Length: 520
Image 1 (cartoon, one colour):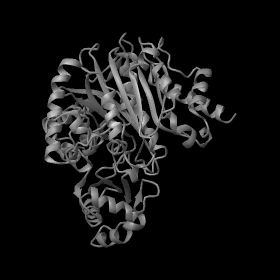
Image 2 (cartoon, rainbow, N blue to C red):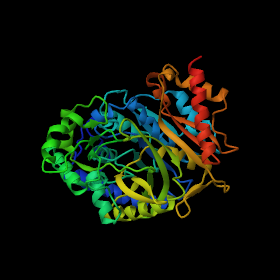
Image 3 (spheres, rainbow, N blue to C red):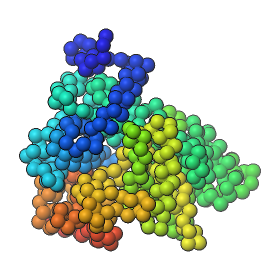
Image 4 (spheres, rainbow, N blue to C red):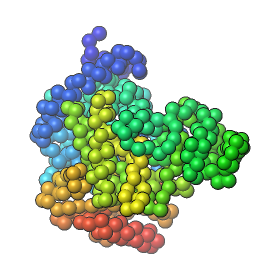
């Protein structure tokens, strides 16, 4: 049977698609990706090219761990930053979500578009929903709805170049690409191991980049305990160790073990065996010890030293390998980590500390070049722990995230709104008119008093208090995760300023205003 749209769309019209993960499906996927390379070269530099981008903001990760994150369903709103692509007047966007997005949220993003009327943009925006709030990933929901996939294809004008843009790529996104007959701008899931905790350590060692002392490719609780014993024997200075599932997200797959009171002799193994279950602290709320290690056994993972110091930061580098094999360092950030054990991503400031932004950018580029050699394309992040010792910073590479992340949305918003770029050689971001810009961003501003504030309320509050982004000054506040506010008391912010102090002052003012308004 020839490879046609009808063939891949499946059961609606009685046709069949290749089974997920089959040799046939993978071969079809590789054909699509080869096609994408030529299409990218011809159409992406042309802002007037007729294009369709199908955005799938699915967090296709362990759904039980994700369910511990309040309002996680609304994380599908984070890729609404890609609506800024509508500033290209012949670009169409199809945006699919689990449940419908409030129109006021869409209007909020469209009003930010420079040089395009809201009316013109709306004609090129298709919003589709699965009407399914269950804990399955969005991509799995779409795959279970052949008629929805058929509608996606029907909405694409004849002659438009099209591709899928996803939060992360697994075998489910690969299947969706094949069934829609669309290439995908992201990493082939067969290369996904390089983005796991164990795979990351392998890549870092290949790049001669320091990593925390530790052990990878662990398979179960017994191997974790053995690794904890070996870590303390070989590195007696270690006070704490982090246990990480290979596919953990935002720190929620981590746990911390303290060596407080550990004997420095042959009793160490017996002591850890006795103390481990009692003292091991799991980051994800309400995830039991038994469930944690059931998941660990399925995923595998690592044990590594918990790096400590008087002055310690958590920077990250975002890179991109495009379909033509060109490598770019897109941005650097200093991440803010929180939670009881300091393992949960809370927010970030951009760019990273000027003392080391260029240095970690160079390290990130080395990693990106190796990943390119393996065939990786798309955006990804590299996380570090940096310790200041004797006026010098020492950097330990922690993990690679072969996906979009918490710093993707804020940087894309800055870039779309100011038409600027980050210069990795200087560690400075310049707008199109040569001005320097900074931001402070979070997707985890929480307060119970925010509960009950609807998207309409938030927009009113922002307008009445002058918190909207101002295109004339290229400063101000953008909100995201707006849909999570009413039920979960949670909101995301990107605060852009002409200096780091100005950006953080905008954040503090926004927090003050929201508290005051919520208490009225």
